[in-house]
Image 1 (tube, rainbow, N blue to C red):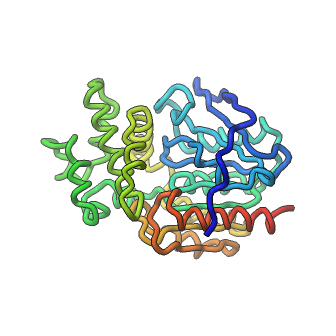
Image 2 (image 1 turned 90 degrees about the horizontal axis):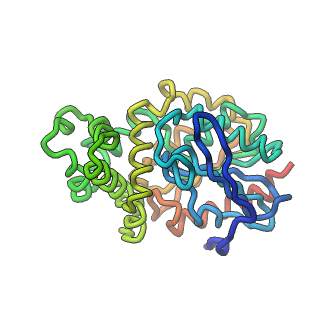
Image 3 (image 1 turned 30 degrees about the horizontal axis):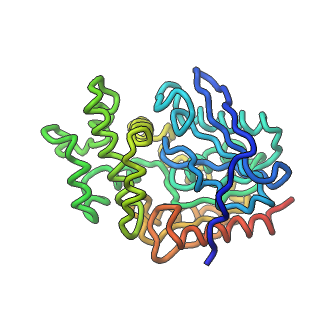
Length: 321
């Protein structure tokens, strides 16, 4: 089984100024003359951590990481202003031009897979291939599975009870509008309620991300700085249908079906059920789908790590132009 590459420090860090006052943190790692790969983090609002650099042979790859608007070390933190999917696509295109990259590989998991698909469909000529994990299509049904009664809540009723706590004595359950009510709290003026809601939201997500309980992962999700950006930005996107037309990603798969791709998806992914990966795969003639038994959603699970590293090794060997 493949293991993560050793810890890797950036050889360059900088902030990329983009529109509406956003300044995006960028880290460059590995070989500047290597295969360029753009790492698109999850959430939205998750940010790129040190783990994100370790799926690539640093002698072969030029690893390009950018925290999306409001996420990670980008400024202003947790900002929702001009924070939409088209803005994020434009930001990565601005970064590509800034770095002088002609074509790059896209690597993304969860929301990162969503953004990678959306970027590739907008700029197919600039994409060499895609390696995706935990496909999330951003449809209302996909959001409802995670955040409304009757989906993942039936698998994790104990964790769901904690998730409901900030919304007690509201109409959220009756109206099936958990996300909307959370959004009100997360954008409200009451700081205590805002942080309590963010922690509950992020804790729920972290608690169901792995096949086996992972207290360390849950603790990282519950960190106040991380949780606020994750919860606010995710809610912002989800109440706005991820800024997509209905079924947009699937309907536009024809634009990138000629590109090589590898999808890695946990069989027991409770955040992004594997049917989403199958639906993408059925419309993508050049895509390989690897379903990982004994794995959930998290990129840190051993089976997921193994398949992602095998994917980057395969891409380096067979996708080079």
